[in-house]
Image 1 (cartoon, helix red, strand yellow):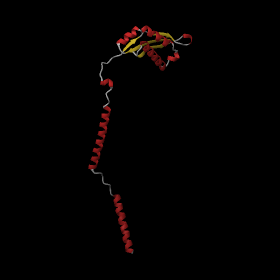
Image 2 (image 1 turned 60 degrees about the horizontal axis):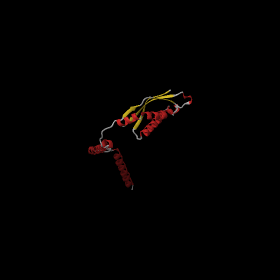
Image 3 (image 1 turned 90 degrees about the vertical axis):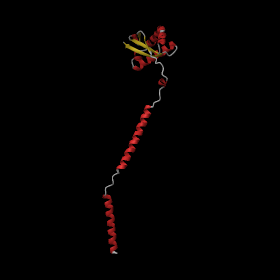
Length: 173
């Protein structure tokens, strides 16, 4: 029996030695073929993603303006004479000097505005003089003034011929 125990101890010792040698053995490096295949697959995936991105970004739908090329109309700016008005302030000591230009679609619209300029000037003077310094001292106030002039001009012309109103000079004193 002692011999069997000795043999069992020897077998256990051999098994432990085998396990130690397995742990001590270095792992096999990846084969060169496996590395090359992985690199090719990675390169193909990156190429597909890049190609899809380029196609997506360059194939934008053609805007309607470009799809139907038309003769490009340029807008016309019509400068009006300077406006000088008293502001609605206590004591009437503040005044406003403004140079206004109206943007229209065509020369035809320009002729109509020139014909109705006295009427337009009257309405613009009323709009300007109904404001106080506090109403127009900020950018928002100037934009509101610009919108009011735009709406009134288009009302007088009975169509939306005036596209925009520009202030060339804006002096409050």
